[in-house]
Length: 135
Image (cartoon, rainbow, N blue to C red):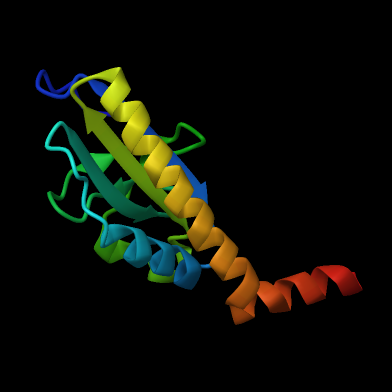
């Protein structure tokens, strides 16, 4: 991650793997509509590939190391097929640990609801459950 922002010294990155790009994109769109209520907290969402570093959608900066530590796997969004982007990466920055905790708790509650809806209603998830049950 980049240098610590003096105005937002507390930070946290949450990476949530999802089975498909479509589900990751749906989760991103569902969560993105809720803006942070406090100006003391900043949040950004990015879809990333499991084994690559990604370009942040808003500013073009490359984020995070590749899980295997190999910098050679670094790529830009335009070089990476969308279907590979199955991890929802959420970056939080806050002025205090308390503000960070409160915001992340709200995010995790919302993410829980999104995942429950996907589990109950999504065709791909139901098909995967049936496939696993038959195996």
